[in-house]
Length: 474
Image 1 (cartoon, rainbow, N blue to C red):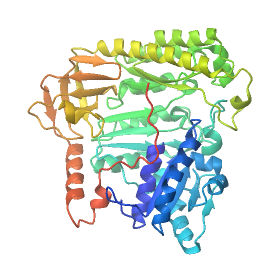
Image 2: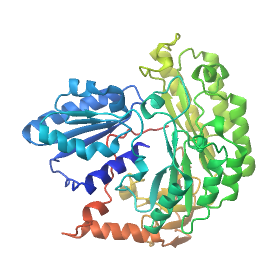
Image 3: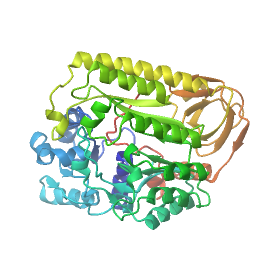
Image 4: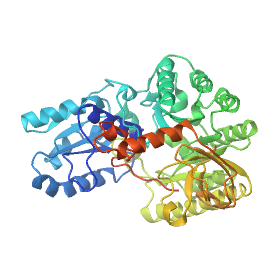
């Protein structure tokens, strides 16, 4: 969601006449798009703001803006602690940023503005997309759940659903531009339709995506086990361009802790969903989120989580140490787990996750995979003389191109030769390389960005738009 919003921020600014600063240049404007999920979010923000202060003092007229969830939570505190910030805006009024920047310039004073409800659905705003071949499509914002550890509902508000026709029109427009893969986004993506009273709306949307000519891959994140229905599993099975991958947050394997978290499902229900998914989609790769050290978690509760990890056979997991978020019910719960115990449990969990994911990836040895070639997925590609991309089940694949020359957005079919906890490797020559419209779009964007004086070059730049985004591992 934050990447999606950052792309909208960049698009808004370009529409207002801003150009991306050249590498190494001092920018006239820096925008922080913040997250409030983790405990150190505020520390990171204020550290970055302090780092920029000398630069701003040395360059009169430079502006700094802060938006996103942490801005929605901190509000006036940001300019109180960092009075050199020019604009603070919230999650519900992203579209106001250009006007707030202009007002701050004219009045020579900070502008802090928030809306309590959504003014414009972010997907209706212009965007500078990071990728020419893959796109994020938001189908809803906000969340109706009341998980005791989560600050997001109070910052993003109640769930607001887009109309299906608007979503499909956006996807068709993206496909016309060369995109062949979309990821449907929602804080609780499979509760889509709750606002307009259709409990089967998400499955219908997946099936409708299957009818869009030229759309090769459809993904979605993140669903909630409470709302995961057989209809969605059947839609995944029956719609060829919906990928066999599923990110299903677990959070805890203990029924006691799940109840305390207000997660509205129990471990048996969770495992039954995974069994049903694998019965209908045998080769589905399933990933998850897990929180260690939630208040009141005992050794028995933690062992229950390890047991679910062993049974679920996750391809990978995002693992988190519980951190107090002020304003959530869990922040004041008794039984806060001591830091040394939390760290010890976290280390045990990550070791088990890595063991299981290594075994699951090793099972793919010798299989043939279809890889959507990506840009920037393999940080060591230059040194290893490999390229990287995602298989249909979303596993990361590092492959040797040999004498082929696939572009980002092209499709490579290759054979897996070895595996590691977080990726597959294919060192043999590709079995085939299919040049795609997405590869053409990537090539056109690269050419436009490299053409001096081309007015389209700034918007066509392939440089990332990730502003203040954390990296998650596990």
